[in-house]
Image 1: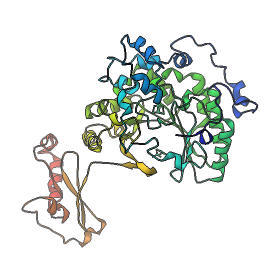
Image 2 (image 1 turned 45 degrees about the vertical axis):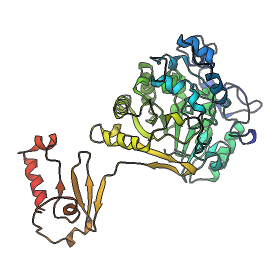
Image 3 (image 1 turned 180 degrees about the vertical axis):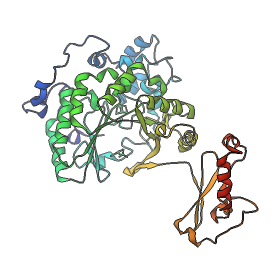
Image 4 (image 1 turned 90 degrees about the vertical axis):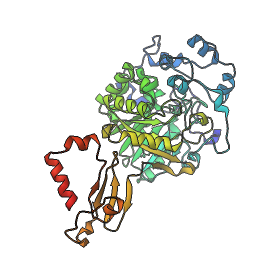
Length: 446
Ligand SMILES: *Cc1c(COP(=O)(O)O)cnc(C)c1O
Ligand code: SF4
């Protein structure tokens, strides 16, 4: 848990107030942007959505028309709840079999606390040269720009920060960040994260972006946000007109289930993409929500239709309060095995385990390398077909090898045969007796 002195936030001002007594870069620009609607009264208005978030067991019971267990209050005391009415409206069945319900509604199971779970499983707090800014990889930093989200995901990896208070970075803190970045020209990529940075006012977001852009060595700015999923009406024309001044700007969002792909979410993503912002998606693998190859397939196909590229599929972090969501690593490998060859390559994310102790993200794939010899690497494809890839030293292999009497991995590794294929596969049947079949047999004789 961040204590006050180490908090990224030095002021508990409300979101919309500029830090007092200090002209921020944003105020200089506020003339060029239209003032935001100050009296929201419409569900289509994002400020209305934030003002009307479900924050108590009572409000939740009222909304669902069903009494929620009273022990949920105890969970809310430890890990705050907030659900936008928009996101709550996506609940189809008010129990944990519903993915949106499971991701948004507190569960007594969050209080299960095995020894190997901790508040800060990625050791982020140890890698903060400036409070609220994680510098882990040489060329990239991650900035916690706010502790607020419009919806508090029950599976959040930053449960220690998100919602503990709701306040955003001050002008003073962002100045410390830019000083650090100016002194560290090796950092070329800044991830603005939180909390959810797009819950901040346009002015506060602009203060952050403008400060980062003032550092000449910062090339790419990324924003990590769940707003397109839980508060899509936040993507206003004013916001887009402001964001497009800070290109190259990338956005990574966080869709976990096809039920989150709604007409409103599609519109939000379309507007962002039309503003020239490349969109990626980070999904967390969650037991009972999306730990199913078919669901991930449907999700990834839905994402690319919205011009959102599936970026990472995360193994659940070892964070206190999410034990009931954890799956085995095997599950992720199984899903990756399923996707390859079945789904467009642009719809396939990288499955990663974010290493405990601050080791960073580790990609995990099914095993595609079957064997290796000094002359050949033996690989398998998604169908079980095995091929060899000759090393550049191929001239050392004796020419005119006879076709092998039997085929297996050793024949591949020694270069006696070039591929071993499941003979009954539909693709093999389809290409039988065609020109490509002849080419295949030529390869076989090589
Ligand atoms: C995930 C992460 C990044 C970005 O990693 P990419 O693989 O470049 O997306 C940078 N810093 C921290 C601390 C992170 O957790
Ligand atoms: S939006 Fe992100 S930071 Fe906020 S609760 Fe969800 S996962 Fe955590």
